[in-house]
Length: 142
Length: 434
Image (cartoon, each protein chain N blue to C red):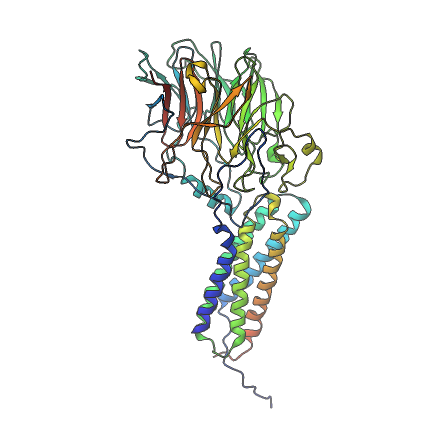
């Protein structure tokens, strides 16, 4: 007879929430790869790509933030992981916004700050996605 | 729910901290004017410093001129007048047009383009030449006709004998012209194509050599500072020398980011230019300039500015080109945006008899606007000798509104300065009071 573990009530992410969360990671990953390509090739088209990918990541990330805030209303007050998830998400978005402004500089003026920020933003987005898609999903579906 | 409020507060705090250094308003006036300008260190916050002109109507107001001079509007409702040419019989030709249309490559291009457009006229470029005539010499140009139309953003104008040359944004063309003519006969004849791919800086400045053999064409760079790629800069940021008869060309001088107006100095027959330098290196960097253009010289763009001051935004760098760069003659101040240059004549009188007039369209990349006026740079023995003097000002009112933006300037040898204003679409004429 399997043991029944009494976990706090948790909901899986709404599919649209999960979709945009994954998309945000992919877009920020694309931005970092584009930055790396520019840093090694000096071909400015790569930094143009990075600018658009960061912008798209911010749009996608904004949708995730909206879902996160709405979800917070339904979340268990004691669920600190959900709050941490939201905080990391917000941090990724805020740094992503700064990174977008950084990428609005001309040519090599983006470097090296833009590359470093792209890496940090991607890391935060990955952590948030891990928490959102993995941790928050293990619970009883109501 | 206390915590969401905390998040929101934190988020705002992060953003404010990010933007905080933008609140430091530069209170300095235009630094770096003259032959040896002071060059501060480079700076660029998270956002470029900006102050976009807020347009207003002139109403009963007029630009300000020195005591002893009068100003009058001799044509209004033009369609983006940029450069003018005073013909031998006193008629004035006005080139009207607005070119460009470089593709928007980044979110910045989309947003920045919209913001900067707020400070410009919304009138569509005329793509034509308008001819103005003052039949009885009373200073009122009562006759106005379209000399030529369906051109492609005409800008530079030059007359050699009975041939009128017009620099469209994509080609140098020629009309036959006889004294007193008010309308071009026949279609323009192409002299040579001009570099026009992308056309980030579309204006093609033009002047003719004193002996009439050559035309000089100013071709601006295809970017602020190579952000459209190095390949896009082939044949850009230079002055061409074009054989007036054959159309054959060669680069005459290079590394001039945006040479927006050219003029031949009377007496010496030396070519001079005003050049718009790069943006986003700080409010007082680097200076726009007035310079004699030395054949074969390299003036720095994109690798360096004002001689050997390296621009770190350019990759790959080129130390050999930096070492070869020469300094311009006279700094006009950073971001003043000179778009017109004309040598004065003794008929202008007094302290304005010997020197050049420079039309300054005015800054965007600065919290404290500069330019927005026509200055006079006094000359002595053929060289700039003294600080610029305001000649036509008041385009930006004390109310912070901008009523006009002076661009091309030309001299009527009978004693008048013609100033094109591409915001109010007006042609101004300044004369000594008689």
